[in-house]
View 1 (cartoon, one colour):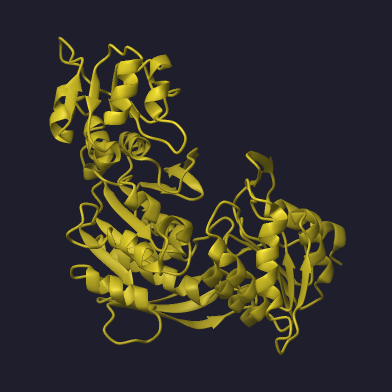
View 2 (cartoon, rainbow, N blue to C red; view 1 turned 120 degrees about the vertical axis):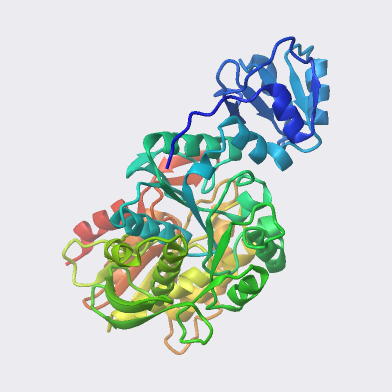
Length: 505
């Protein structure tokens, strides 16, 4: 695999690529080596992409930035004209529509020089990417990872803020990875990223689909819209479609996605016919580790998976199918897969207590149901959960989250998650309403409201007895709690350890 240092394109070439027009055209060719959305971070001589915002247009900030040129829409061009802007301005109808392609051109299309595997779906994206990372490393690949928990280049973390970064940041990351010697990139691809064009201009070799359940309906409005956003990654008529598709068909959305894709590799864990890669659990121990059987079109393997739950059997099958589709040595891949673990995903916190304590990122109804079902199978005793919902996000799932918690747990503590700018008590009331709908369920769950998240974790630990299991859901790997517009340090794992050391006997 060759690594190339791209020749920076001229502004005129970017105008031709984007179909835009140049205002204040430069007298000499202006080579663009960087593009950015943040006016405070653009390098001198770079291209500032000024997009319309929810409150103010990005062009408003152009005057103070050191960019050599500005990339904007007609509304932005009017703002710049009013400011007396004299630098070159590239104007298009919709910046987002072409931002990915322009960014890829600026950075020399680095994704074309590596093998890219993208994972989308509601739950499991992070886990599948970590499984891919470990498996690919075992197979000899040099791996970069991009996702919810951050970005890693050859195992070292690099700060990023979005599950799928904006197109300029993403393409710059790809070039940095290529220059570092990365051969394979595994990344989460969110529905927002697909809809907003963040991955446009990116050459994906394999796209993987985990599942679909209710989430992000504040953005997509309906499940059909949510599905169609994900389908952009698989439909061969889409500009964002990967070369090959791997689809888990364990739910009806997966079946529909496989029908949308062209010659997909189908993955199943329910014993259904017509799948190319299948997996099933053979046994499990009290730690949650499970022995599974996994079959590809050319071989069958038995391995121990460190993570519990039927959903992780499906995640392992999808990761293996994606590796198989990318022509990776599956025997070597399996050795890495057996060691994969994910921060904040069914992460056990062990301080010597006589019950199971877990922290997980589950923040949607189906994910909460899945983790509780998994814990119920692991222990002979009772199951307790601390659950909350995020503010300024899909409010329709809050009642359902409470209902799923009370349907499966013996003790439910409704607490604050990231309330953001919403009233925390109002959010809790909606989750509580769902939980109390099942207060008269056959197992008579106890439901309690404790807004303070640390106190809620304390109550959970104090409730637990030998042989029980308790779980805190919603934040997983996150180390901050957003109240208003301020982020306060808060780590569920730290708080669980503190509570266990204080109260567990």
